[in-house]
Image (cartoon, rainbow, N blue to C red; front, side):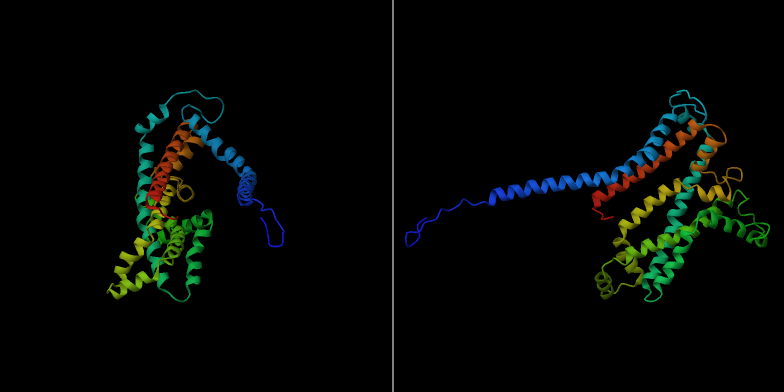
Length: 311
């Protein structure tokens, strides 16, 4: 290129394209390096999960097809353990108790949690104090709270003595009594979660419904519940899983008694594995519990993707 006065200069080709290519390659290398570092950080956790969860899980599936007693060798017996479940009255009763427990916790603690969260959402003062009060029973160890309630319900020196009812020793009241005790420690957690979801509802929806003349109940039914539906579904599905895995309160308070009135699948599995020396059958019960949980989790994932829930 010629400039006035005879000066000339050579125009260099633009270096934009190679620079972008270099940046892309550098970005890919950086991304690969960060991904490798992330996997290295996760490696210990993956190894622990493989050893503690995946390994025993695979072994449980294998032993569910054997007659293993828990000690010594085992023999492959095919699906005999699973066939036994269909004729085992103890398994059928325990399964029905789990279903009853699930329905109870889907209705009572969930309803109490929603009601408590709604009341807290209306407060303008002392909300933090009530949060702490509701949450304290949840953080108390199950052994401690169950032991306290065992003394409270005692027919010798507790509430049972004054009311003349042996709550934990009567087959008709034992399971509801244990469920009430577990509800006492659980519903506060639901209150806190539901309250967090309610506080995320857009206030303009309440203002608009108020201008349309909606009362508190109509706002709760038509604004609050639809807005927190993902949280409701998540806790509902988790409640189903936890209800089928319940063990601690039942074992501490009644150990499945009296006469199997509070026996659930997890306590039956424990009894077969460690008292009846039927570890293979207990493993089959564990596989059934895992399948139930897997179906519930898969249902939630399908709903979450179809509804595009951000939870």
